[in-house]
Image (cartoon, rainbow, N blue to C red; front, side):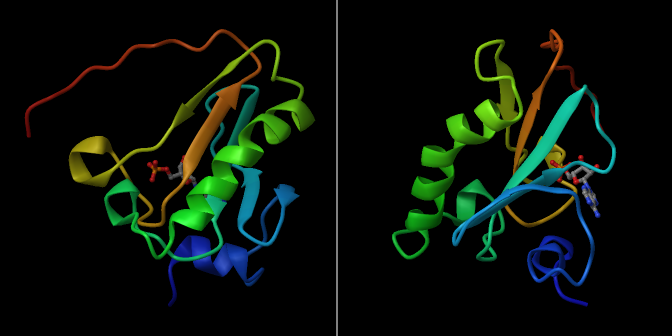
Amino acid sequence: MDCLFCEIVKKNIPSKIVFENEYLLAFEDIHPVAPVHVLIIPKMHIKDINDISEQNIEYLTQIMLSIKDIAKMLGIVETGYKLVSNVGKDGGQEVPHLHFHMIGGAKINANISYKND
Ligand code: AMP
């Protein structure tokens, strides 16, 4: 099987899409941790932040330009939100396709902790 999020981009796996354009897809996280929890992903397969290059930077530019519009659409642009991108094993990345968690709709805890393996 292809990458899970590539399958979502191709609509082979259903998702609750909140915004889409040529470069990106924003859809609801299946396990929301807050009243608003949306994942924003590039339509091109980029593994993580470490995988960003001159060849794919346009996707990142377009995502960054769209963030405030998506937040506006979700009604959280004024109240605020967290934008999180996990990278790799220690970063807690479960799906190896670059994504930004947009989390809001309530005051979000900033607790970050760690454990040794
Ligand atoms: P991360 O741990 O940063 O890789 O985040 C992966 C996120 O993808 C988690 O918050 C999952 O709940 C979410 N997720 C996994 N499968 C799906 C799916 N089919 N539709 C929507 N969200 C998903």
